[in-house]
Length: 123
Image (cartoon, rainbow, N blue to C red; front, side):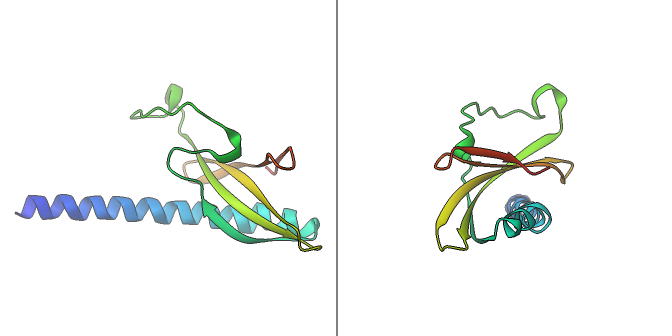
């Protein structure tokens, strides 16, 4: 009985930890890179949304593999999130953000929008 309880608690802590890490990475990217970029464009982020487990949004990465380590032993991780922008005229746009991390440190932030046909590298 104790073993089953321990396994259930471990799974819960693992899921909760991943959610907290995801939120932390997204908030850090918003504060340090995304918000300053859009403030210069006189726009603001009004909503963020989780892309999904197997989706990469506008980046269209179709290759998904489950491995114990990253490809070629690299320890980089990609986090995808939708952000919704409102410009000074009230127009709303959606971007997909690819946040590349290395040991939870942000190394590169890329914005992509298919509707505007743009890809912008912020870092």
